Length: 333
Ligand code: TRP
Image (cartoon, rainbow, N blue to C red; front, side, top):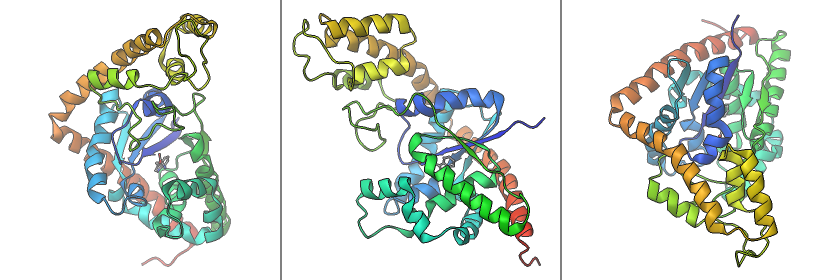
């Protein structure tokens, strides 16, 4: 029996952080047992909003691959591949642009939010507006049916399936499978400043490569309850980043519940809960950092891993592209 195919990816615009770990990397470690898993280093998609800085994207390809390997992604079980070196993805993207309207792209809630957040105004790069079609190419080229993504990405999967249905209807056969978004329950971790989202570029993240001093400083600086002035005062759990992170990383749930009610009653200081979180994060990151340092001394191994994965992915994606072209009945020489 073939295992179901799973595809996820990351835009290589900065090192991955503990938010990625909680929200996706830890799941990817499990999926490599149960699924056929592809991880896409989405450097072409990264350019859709970083066209002015291709060097940043280039540098981060290896950084993100190192993060994958350091957390325990096993290249023998998970195929790590580089988007820009998979021409079938670009070809399918062009093809799919004929199966989606500009109005539909503009209505995509993810795109709308991102356009606002990036302050593009009226100067939206065409590649950015169209990246949902390119992501549909990524997903379908691998015939991936399970797509674990953050909640914000769900509209992209919906749009992928619309394209799939139009292509299949035109071809008169189900050449492409539909995909299903799998949204992790945990939700997205906020930044250490309490801002909505931990971001690679926002200066509010704890990278998986953080030194132990960086971890300490980040936890010390972490947003708690601004109304919790004296230890004996009752404190708030909601919006308190330390507790949000403890919820994500503290395995001793019984003790954590105890601490929460103590904090809410009053008499538990921020220092205590920060110490607990710091210990947990130090223990989580130390082995990742160590492995990352070891692997990064062997750049050849990292490059070979990406090369070999990309080779496997190339065969897969070329085969799908040929099938789609044939199913649509385009001229073949
Ligand atoms: N859009 C995803 C992100 O920003 C990255 C991505 C590119 C992706 N292609 C994909 C995710 C295909 C899932 C499937 O994180």
